[in-house]
Amino acid sequence: MTTPPPVPLDPLYALDDAILEQRIQVAKAQLGESCVILGHHYQREEVYRFADLTGDSLKLARLASQRPQARYIVFCGVHFMAEVADILSGPDQIAILPDLAAGCSMADMADLPGVSAAWRDLGRILDMERTVTPITYVNSTADLKAFCGDHGGTVCTSSNAVRILQWAFEQREKVLFFPDQHLGRNSAVGLGIPLERIVVYHPDAGPLGGLSADQVRNARVILWEGFCSVHQMFQPAHVDLFRQRVPGVRIVVHPECSLEVCQKADVLGSTEQIQAAVRAAPPGSRFAIGTELNLVNRLQKEQPDKEIHFLCPTICMCSTMFRIDLQHLCWTLENLVAGHVVNPIQVPAREAASARVALERMLAVV
Ligand code: CIZ
Ligand code: SF4
Image 1 (cartoon, protein in one colour):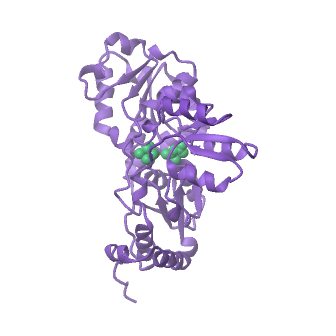
Image 2: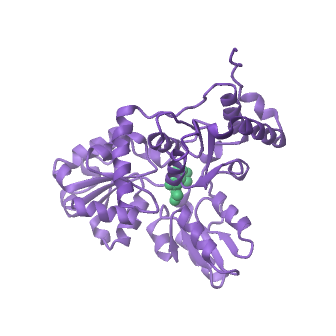
């Protein structure tokens, strides 16, 4: 039997959504249990609807690895998430990202050459391997997770960052945290570290990232200068506005927001924790939520007995996650049916092994 030719992507853009949805249903049914579709909380609704499993990045990667019959893991999320799924899944499973352009601008703010250079640079005045634990947020490239694995460090998520920092301080006296300065700062402040002992390393600012030797020696936490372009849109003034306008409102924000916003909020949490907080509240509760718009819209639909606002007057959406559309999902699944694996994400073996060490250190803590 000859393999059918690959399905081209472009013609799918001439089709109506209803046709695409129908074709996705058919391909999904044909693939059966050999394929699992994962949908991240920030994914647009029309794609999210087809997910077999939904959740945050780590939860999804773990759930997929528990389904060995699923040879194909189609990750409707962004690149680093598909990498984590590849690292944690079995040797016969293949992680797929429907559009390779679905990256994460925060993850792109730290790369291995840059972090390795900073490690050497700081090493001029600190004994790095004895005094500094590297921690990477899960929103990072696999080679940085591998770096942490190789240097006694670990990974954290937005759900467990405080606990992971605590673990790190049980190992060594300082932490180098990348790529998200906000998650790092919010978590360190949550642990009671004074702000003057939390410093920012600016990778383009020359020696010691623009810090003085004293600042580096005095620091407990050295933050990389990264941020999420979506979460940086939320401002303290937005919190003030909702408190004035909506009596009894509870402000719930993601720790990728700035410290100023997080300190004004009532609840700080990852996407899973935000959902749990809203779901657990009694009917009539009022919320203003500071995280990606698709998640907030979904909560509004799911919990009509609560008043849920989006904590920003402008639209804050993850534009890279948005790249996964019905066309790319249809294209991916129909190609799998035709025997063609499009966009596999395969982390090189040595890198995956070191990254797994870092991830397993995290999983042993939380
Ligand atoms: O790890 C994730 O899935 C992200 C990006 C955020 C969160 O809080 O779950
Ligand atoms: Fe990356 Fe921000 Fe998008 Fe999350 S919301 S995937 S951190 S760009």
